[in-house]
Length: 271
Image (cartoon, rainbow, N blue to C red; front, top):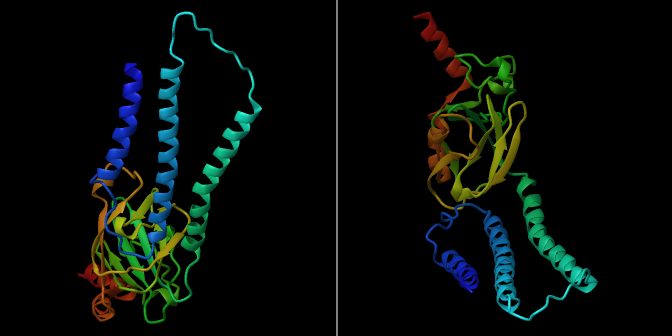
């Protein structure tokens, strides 16, 4: 009987914790409310199944508990029950997967008017690269990395000379405009994650991954690495500032281009 009480309290406590918990998401700041909706659907489905299964176990313990003179009925097969279980499980799994697949298609389908920002992860800081006046990013390769070229840009590619380099600083983006993030890692697997934007993606050495989002409100948001990347992982943090177009353009004009950073490095080396 005590087991039955414990199981019922487990269900009641789990539901109460879910409804009253203070540990919900941070307020969303992008267009990806679809992701929140998908997670809520998953919570409802898994919560219903959890509640039903645990209460059914409690009922069985109470209903079929040992009593003197009682004899168990052995039933090796019940095809009707098996069909119900298989069908219910299939419907539940499909209900959880279908919204995720719809959102995933939107997640990887980048709008044609999205601006491009490259995010470079390395132990243990974030760097960013934005297109210059030609609106194109130049080629980059980890084999090109040197102290004066920390992101590995190709010095022989004219398209990269006006690229804006932000090493270990803040990334600024304009509010209300879609942004495609190109994600590149120099050393190990990282994961660029801003909780308020909801979207995130692993950064795999040797390849470029991506996702997009549209920031919907201005503010300053913290960047986290969502993949264990070494002893400095907890300190691998950055900042994304979402602001008006005018403020963004003013910030952009103050940033150094790749050619300017090379000239500064050469000047420092000559001293």
